[in-house]
Image (cartoon, rainbow, N blue to C red):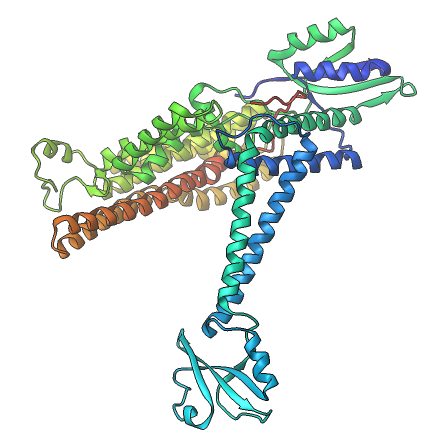
Length: 611
């Protein structure tokens, strides 16, 4: 749910304003209204400095060495300069190595030589000409026609030198290349020197990271607090020849008492207002323990608008179920659960919600894997003759209840239909909350059509309901739904406008509803493709191990193929299982729920603390 907000307008005498802001920053409950004042040059410099601090933190964090010194006398600015310069040297050396390796590749076919020898030969009146030709173009008669020496063969090319007295032009079907300036061994030596310098630079950073990092993190937070303070300072309105300062801000209703006690203690005059229509109100979500885990997923799309219904609690169970449906392997699910449980033992408080979410997604995957009968690519269930695929006594009864591919596809479409219908109910609730019940009447008409008319028609067509009863049911519910859907969709407007709008909505609904529901087939398709690919790797591993004669070698081949195959399948399946339910949520569900979004996150004016 979205916590209700109150708008506070505070009037402060200009001489007390600076100290007032410092104290207001300490309590950290007011989201100051941004008047759109652009940051000045000094603030931009501070912002760039924060970016530099972030870069240094990113450089130092992976290089922490336990036995390194934990304190330093250096100031943050000096540390910043040292680390950035050291990293710049590392980057330059890496770039130099790349260029040297390219040069080395060019000169390597010419082997090792003494560059001074070229000068001596030239002084003696002899010129060296360097050539390369493909093996097909190279002719053996060149060896007798010219004073030619083959240097090497590489990548289908022959590299050779012709020693010539004078400057006469040599007619030969080969590419003349520039003489190498130095041998590959010299270049290799320089590459090794660069690598040594890089290692020394990394060692230096590692030895000082434990002392440098706390100072940089503290300086980063201090700078961030200064930026925040200056921004609020500049966003205040001035009245009475700058004698009075006015700032406006949003406060959650639950924090009102805390703020008002503070303002009353300071003797500050203030006004409290409710949000007005079209006013940009910051959004603070307050969901239960389960739904809160899914807030980061919803935030990938957008926060709801202030007057909207927060639909995080409503898509959360579906997303969890859809992830498990897409991955659909009990073995993979158990692997995720085990991994997240191990991670929870050492995780920081910030990381724990993500690991708990991962555990729940793993649990869903395990359940769906059991229902669909897949365990690390091993498939369970019944064959075409209705017999269990695996004749293991304690698994025979279980396999009778495993859903086959046809049932899984029907289940995917059924879940899609339920989520779309659920979204339509949420849209009606949203319209009632934002505009009033009259604006939801048309939506309820469509709900009747989708919930009753369409199912009755389908059941009648399939002869699951007697035609004389079914035809009456779908016709009656169709009329009951069509009247509000076609004639009451724009309250307050004339009947012709309502009818025209209703026809347009009917076209959109007819063309979109079927496509929306069919989109959920991807749940079945991803799950079955992951299972099939896992099974293919299992078969490949068994056949390959038997093909090499079994024994220790066969076991190694078996383990290698299974490890590689299932690692690849697991990665691809998890990625698809994350992305596709995301798509179903943000496109099909959000559209049918009438989700508009566009809210801004509640960001109170507060001091940034080191976690």
